[in-house]
Image (cartoon, rainbow, N blue to C red; front, side, top):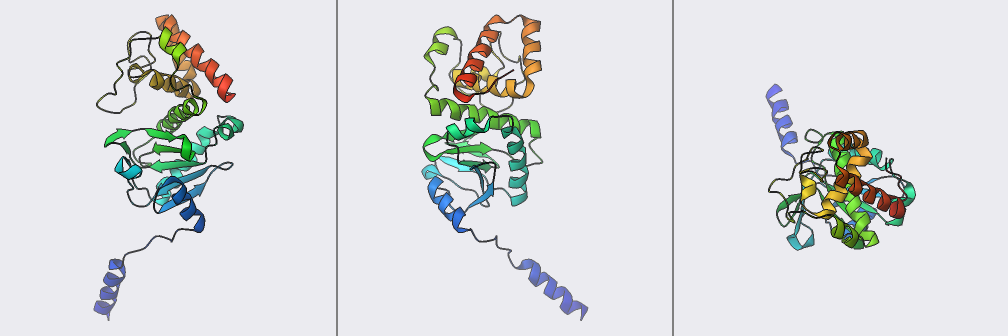
Amino acid sequence: MLKLFSFLIVIILAVPVHATPQTEEEIRAGQEIYIKDLRLIHGPGNIKFGYVLEDAVPGGGKYFCGKLTHKQAQDSATIIQSAMQKLPQKSLEDIHLKYLLMCSQAKAQNKSIGGIPVPPLRLLMLSVGTTSQRSTDYLSYVFLHELYHLFEFSYGIYHDPVWDAEFTGYSNQYPQELKVSPIGSGKPGFINAYGMSFPHEERAEIFALLMLQSSKVYDHIKATEDTVLLQKLDHVRTNANQYMGIELP
C-alpha cells in the first residue's frame, strides 16, 4: 500500500502544472502591445502592469522580455506603484501611459537595457529582475529613469537643442556593462559616470536621483562647487515643472 501511495505521488508530481488561462482582457492587451500570453496586474488609475510567464521576443525579435512568476511580478508592481505615488496623477495621464511591461531581464538587439519607452503603444517596458536580485531603491530608480525618457519622447524634447548648445563632453556611446553609477562617479560637470554617455541619459539620471536622493545630489554639488552640474539640475527641474507639473527638490 505504501509503495502504491509513493508511486501515485511520483505521478502527481510529474504532471505539469499549467498556468491559469488568459482572460479576455489579457488577450486584448497582448494584441495591443504585441506580447503573446501577456498577464496583467491592475495598477493605479488606468495603468496596467503586464508580465510574461515565458520569455518573449517582441518587435520581431528586436527586443527580449524575460519571464516572471506571478509573485515576482506582484512584488515588483508594488514597488513601482509606491514610486508612482511620488508623481502627480495628472502627469501620468497626460502622457497616456497604459501598460507597464515588467521583465526579469530586458534587452534591445541582444544588449541589456533598463527599459524602453514606446509612446505609440502607450507602453513602458522595464527590466525589474527578481525580488532576490533587485532592491526597492534600485527598482524605483529604474522606473523613474525610464519614465523620464517617456516624458521626453511624449513632449518632443528627447533631442534638446538648448541643452546640446550649453553642455558638451558626452561619449555618445553606452558602457559595455549596464550598472548603477554612484553620484559623483563621473567627471566634473556630470551627475555620474553613466550620465556621461548621452545627454538624454544624464537628464534621466538627474531626474531619478533628484526624486530619490536629492540631499545627496546637493551635498555633492556643495562639496565640489560644481556650477555646471547645478545648471544641468536647474534645466531638468524647469522641464519637469513645465511638462510634468512636478516640483523637483
